[in-house]
Length: 332
Image 1 (spheres, one colour):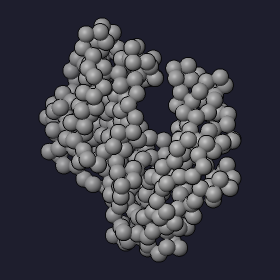
Image 2 (spheres, rainbow, N blue to C red):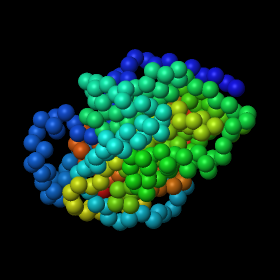
Image 3 (cartoon, one colour):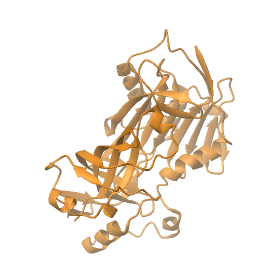
Image 4 (cartoon, rainbow, N blue to C red):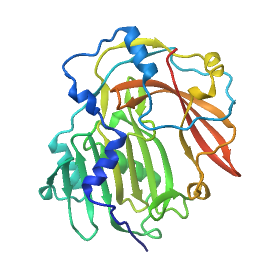
């Protein structure tokens, strides 16, 4: 039995603010404008907005790309519109809290949103940020029995869908990746299945049959102990395309190959324990691209679902192999 004690860094309000940075669904400047005034969906106007749309955070650029694909099959056109966030009722939130072992009656109204907390021995905390439209949950103190009570990956996946289905349409959620983790305080890092203490599930929503994600994060993330105990949850409100908008042509393979490297963004770099505990994680050598996908990235600066081509590949960081995800604005 391994006992892990996770200490909070400040109050639940701070936790809500941190999570909210990734998914502030309406930017502050936008709120000062009249939200009743519909954005003009003139093709030229929207095309200019997409081209000017920049990541919420500054992203690294690749230094070299090696294309291991010769062609791809993605849609030749993509619909662009403004994001509309779906609401989650108090009844659904209360049901989620109950499943997480939180007493809803202990709720406290905080400045940054509704904070629900329980001061039990395991120090569970649930933060519902009504302004930035997200939920974060953490169990601060927990035991993981990694010998006798391990459950299958399939059961953990089922439990994930059962839990998120309390507040969102589970059919709209698609799992991107399930990976084994262990705690090297204060971080969860990749692990072998034999040494794992938890599993991390990353998932995204679908909009118009394309996934929607942030520049640095998936829309839903859960860490669950190998015994099935939920240790951490970050869930952003789901969204749909609120305006029909316009269709735009997607860049072709030949057009992408001819672009300058500065057009691409390094969205993520993931490696093993040695890499994740290293100090210099931004330097990678030649990136070999093996897969491509058309998706939306939600940019909280402008409220648009911006179409991106996502390129999955591998590279070396020193002597270590890492997985790399590149992003490129998709419209011509």
